[in-house]
Image 1 (tube, one colour):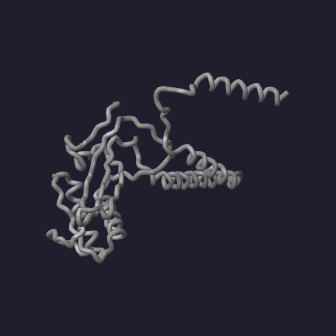
Image 2: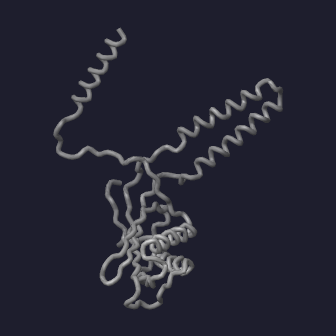
Length: 228
């Protein structure tokens, strides 16, 4: 009987989904990408880390024996101007010969920062569901060990375990930025070229705090996607 019920349910489900879909439609069906992680810039020290990573990428491609020239920024934006200085520092500290004035022997390094603004309230993955289950199970298990050991000692032990559990919970969650998904992101492109040919090209994408967007883009350089 169970097999007959299961088969009937399966057939009914297939008929239901077939009724709700079509073989031909006028536009593609929207699907999500697999879950991934993207860094969020929240401090000037993060700028330094980015410059060091970019410098290492440049060295990996052009080597540390070639002379390079970092093109000057033509913008007044804080991030791009500061990144120019930080990249010079990172390359010099890594032993790269960085020219003050451009020569025909230099590999030219260009930095470009593009700011993008997306719509509000983008969906994000809850960071707590699995961790809360693990925390609850951990506290229950330790409390079981102290069960029946008596009065205030047992209560104190339970309280300590709960505190330790919360520390573990916070430790796990510390990797993730708090708050909603930022509307603003930046794409940093660093290119290396010589004799009118590209040698290398790198792109890195980061979230930025929405309140800090003026550090990365002016009103005429930010591209806004409608849908708010």
